[in-house]
Image (tube, rainbow, N blue to C red; front, side, top):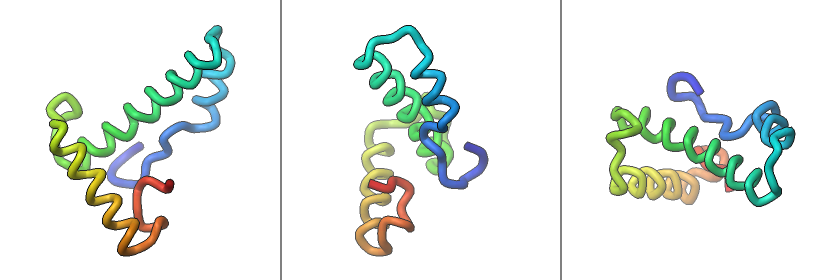
Length: 83
């Protein structure tokens, strides 16, 4: 994830590493969720111009609101989150 390009939240290589880990299925799910959440928070921090440690709940919520608004107004392809 470099610059402000759209992030890839979990690469195939990262997913394969999680699969190879000696973890239960729920632990693998939580690991994937944690890795992708970290990348999303890093992306949000970059877009807000702050260090990830300085992100506030308000900034995170506002970012999600802006991304959802973009999706509603411009379509899913214009948003960061593609769900």
